[in-house]
Image (cartoon, rainbow, N blue to C red; front, side, top):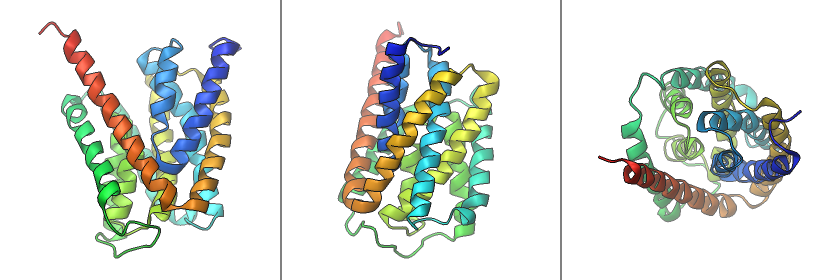
Length: 260
């Protein structure tokens, strides 16, 4: 029935739960699920596609949890979410057209910068601050830019949305996290739609992992709402640094394997 054995599925369900928990708080759930999918025999494209299948469940659950907690009005985010969805599709379709090598080189340094920003910036808590960018401009510029990146490459999308909401939108840490989840859900859904056309996800396995994501995301969102910035900030810093380290390592392995 499933594309993997029951033993492997049990491992993937555990990974899905852990990813849902982490992603609901600080993003970066793909750091857990994609490597595990690769270890279980999925090729890179299938792993990325399956990751989107299960990831939409966690992001949707987290978005609903934050909305029920009163931290975000989902109706007010419908238009930004639609923009995120469309931009992600466009980004995914541009994978074979745009050169992504430069982005992959710059990305780890950017993630380290994000980690340093959240670790050292004083006054970052759950309180809102003055906006530095009008909501309309934010919606028409940063939302499609970050969502398009999610379709094109993907790693660090949640961190980029968080940085944008905090530094330019003027949101507190918890509110920024809450608003990130619906846009991340929309960009995941758009990328999944594109992957469904150009790739072959493990649908049944991804759906099963999605159920585990739901439980992990509910627990993560509940803790984040209870503890707030004291939990979100350090986890965001750690996930950004871990992702940057992984990307640096991937580049090192690629260059070491190259004969030139």
